Length: 439
Length: 41
Ligand SMILES: Cc1cc2nc3c(=O)[nH]c(=O)nc-3n(C[C@H](O)[C@H](O)[C@H](O)COP(=O)(O)OP(=O)(O)OC[C@H]3O[C@@H](n4cnc5c(N)ncnc54)[C@H](O)[C@@H]3O)c2cc1C
Image (cartoon, each protein chain N blue to C red):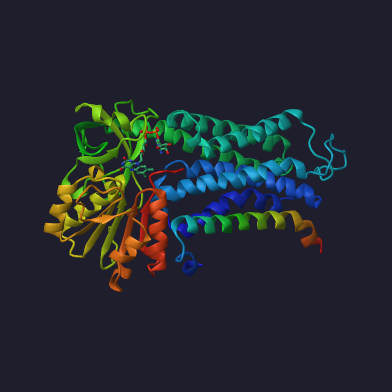
């Protein structure tokens, strides 16, 4: 979906309850009471919209990218938290049974204890959920455990907030707004069920099997999977999938990996996987014949349809995975535009697909620039990081400023390279990037 | 806005759009809270 439309739709969802409260019959109260109610409603609406941002919906992420979608999920959670935290402290009206003449509860707050207790629970749980997510990488528990806890915690908070809003909320006494809250809650829950129930069911219908696992570099493996009883996946070079190897289709044990094969090469999918944690360290032991499941394709690191006169691919470490897929596809298609690959690694043993890159240089004319941070003796290539200086040197021409730049690597490298490119006059629209770490 | 965003890295753009969203949300909240004054003059 177009990013502007996405922003407009997002604001529509988040501001709808406030708008309906405004349009309703209830007269306004004091500034502080209205700020309190408004902050509470906005916090709840943002929490509900968070489910849509994290549901891996392609309509949401196909244009802006999954990494940007996830980043907004993270950032907006902080806004919801801030609004939720101030919400109870802003009220100035007393908590009392309603005065008989005050039919719209303009002067008092509800005295329904159960409605407050659910609100209080949610108020205590929300900071825990957000802080655990922010500190996830520093805490020592498995990603899958965190994800499950995060999903259950979020559903629990949304349920508590729905009860609190419908029973304590003044504006939610209006049947239309109450209906909207219930509708938004159901959509949020449905998106959770879609991820945990519908997607696994779909994945079960199109299983894959591991065909080959081979070492392609230091602690780096290439995994090939083949479709079983179906045609395979329609994807574009540079996209990624959530891959589950050796577990049931509903298992949470799945990891995102870029597809390193090219669609034009057939229905097999290939991945280049670097050892990092629990799962990736066991990749070398995976036996051919092991069942696999795939959720995807996702991501917008896609050059199809781009008209720039040249394509620069800038990879750090295992960031080569999607970029080699793109290069392979361009080669298959006989794309005549010039291509340059800048490939940074710490040591020479980490370089994956070295021979194939030489072949691509010979057959496709791709210029390959290797950079090593710790080069071996006798190294004739570049030494050092893949940084701004290197980029300015390699792409030092007016023509190269019109090219398309595709970046994938460690966040720090991408930040430095992007800043250098923008400094050189390359517009942000000519830069595509994919983050391997949602932070 | 587009030209302004074009001069930023991906995370820079995320931050700008995030601030714009927050601004819209806070503005809506203030308008909502002040509507009593706004409508009765
Ligand atoms: C879009 C994308 C494409 C990627 N492509 C590749 C690739 O081609 N090759 C490659 O080697 N690596 C790739 N990665 C990184 C890869 O996903 C992680 O290295 C891998 O998941 C680590 O899993 P683990 O169990 O070994 O380690 P863990 O210790 O379990 O995880 C290490 C970190 O990996 C991330 N991670 C783990 N599981 C998930 C998950 N289900 N969803 C999101 N993040 C998760 C988390 O940040 C976690 O802290 C990609 C990541 C993303 C987001």
